Image (cartoon, rainbow, N blue to C red; front, side, top):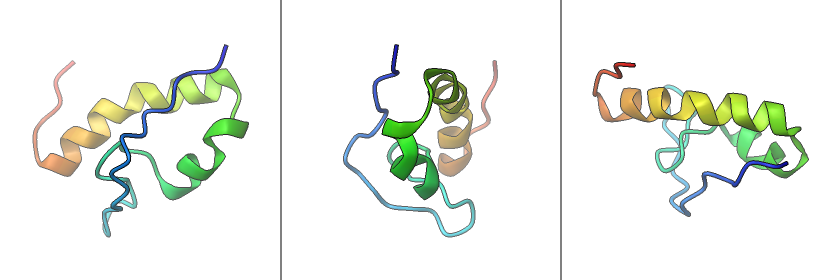
Length: 62
């Protein structure tokens, strides 16, 4: 089963990481989301909290 897109319609990409400041995905990940296999979507989605924390300058603790 496909994973719901994490897009929040705030598509601004960080110059140093290449990640979207809204959802944390790369441009390539955003473009390929619908074609990605569910396991690929889950892997990307699992990494988004860490990416977003890095973008906002907060440490991410698991």
